[in-house]
Image 1: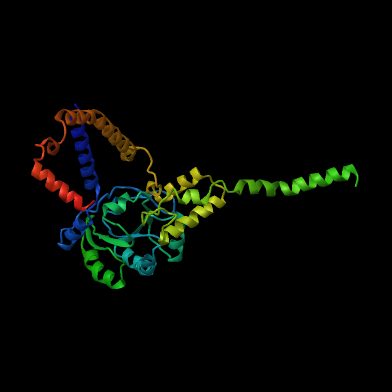
Image 2: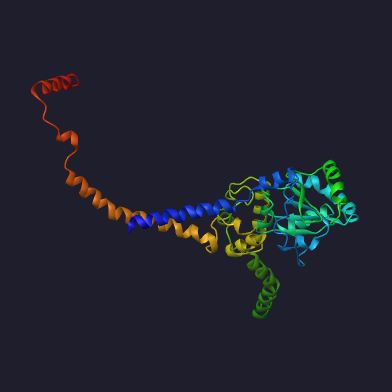
Length: 180
Length: 158
C-alpha cells in the first residue's frame, strides 16, 4: 500500500511541476513569431482592466479596428520617464490615423502613476494591471515594453526596451497604412 | 482662584484640546514599520522589502510610511498593498486556489516521510539483525602467520 502511496505522491509532484512550467509564458515565442513575420494574436484581448482614472474598465477588444501601441510602464522606472515625452508627442499623430497609444501600468501605485500621467501630459488611456496577468501574457517581465497591435488585433512589432522616436518612425507608418 | 473659575478654565481647556487629542488618537501609529516591511515583498526584485534596493522598493516603503502615518493597522496596510500591487506583494501567499498547495504539500510530504520511516525502519533493522554480523567479521579466523604479521604492523604504530 505504501509504495503505491509514494508513487502517487511522486506522480502528483511531477504533475504539479509540469503545471508550473506550463504556466510560464514564453516571451521568446512571441518575439520569434513577430521576427518571422507570423504575427500572433494579441493575448487576453478581452480581459477588462480598470482605467487609471478609476472610472470603468477597458480591454484591447474595445480598440478593435485601430492600431494600438501598447506601452507597459511604471512610474518608478527611469527608462519609462525617458520615453514618456516621445510617446506623449506621438499620440496626436496616431489619433489622426485611427490609432492610439494605450498605457498599461503594473507593479505601481495608482497615485504615483497619476502623477506620472500629469507630469508627462499623457493624453491616452492608461490601464492598471494589478495582478500582472495581462502583461505577463505578452511575455513582459520588466518595464518599459511596447507592442504594436495592428488593425486585425495581431502583434506586428514589439520593443522590449525603451522606444525611441526613430523606432516609432520606422515601425509605425507601414502598420498604420494597412487596412483592417 | 475661585472654584467656579477653575471649573470654567478646565472646561475651556477640554474644549480647546479635545479635537487635537482626538486627531492624535486617529492618526497614532497602529502598525510597526518593521513588522510590515518584513512581511511584504518588493514586487519587482522579489526580495523582502526590508532589504530590497530597487526604485520600486523605495516607492513601496514610502507608501507604507504614509499608510502608517494615516493610522492604518497592519492588516489594513496589507490589504491596501494587495489592491495596489496584487497578492504577489505578500511574502506569505493567501491560502486559497493554487496557493493552497504551498501550505498542504510540505506537511503531507513530512507525514509521508514519517510514515515511510515508521514502517520500513523496523523491517530494515529486523532484516539486518537476521542477516547476522557483517561478512568481514564472519570470515575465517586469521592463521598464526597472518596474526603475527598484523600484530607486527600494529606494533609499529604503538
